[in-house]
Image (tube, rainbow, N blue to C red):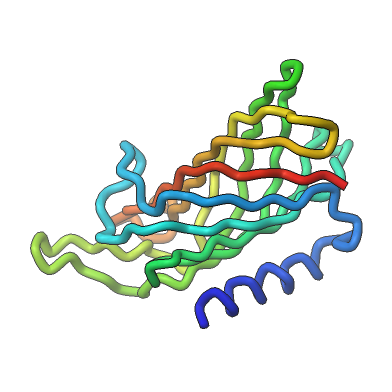
Amino acid sequence: MRFIRSFSAILVLAGFVPGAAMAQEVYGGVYVHAVDTPFTFDTNEGGTDVQAGLRFDQIGALGGMQPYVFGSVNLSGDTSFVGAGVSWKAEMGKVYLRPGVGLVVHDAPELRVDPATGIRTDLGSRVLFEPEIALGYDISDRFSIEASWVHISNARLFNSEQNPGIDTMGVRVNIGF
């Protein structure tokens, strides 16, 4: 049921982006959920995420950034999220770097406290920031593969007392049109 809601939200978000029918790329991948990094602390979550999204034509006024919409479904029943943002592809031959930033809406509990430590592990806000970065390789004109890191957190802006965040790391395949 959670997967259906998340995927439906992706389709709804895509409908609000101008030219949704003109997506330039579709992408999808598999990610490790709640990877331990210096940007987060333990939320007692884990498992595997499946992520899918759409990238649209570059916007010249934004230096060639591409708007995107995507969703991430946790297969273990932990936090899933949908979002939108912009990314930029810095090409160095067939290899490229793709940084991006956006906002996501998630379905984690509004209040969650680790019973062992008493520390809050909820994400602090229903809407979170979503910086990401990928290192990719163009296999052909239409296909590429990326190793990517996606981080979601409130950056302590919505709740100054805590900010656990969640990091996901994985591999995604991009198919251009």
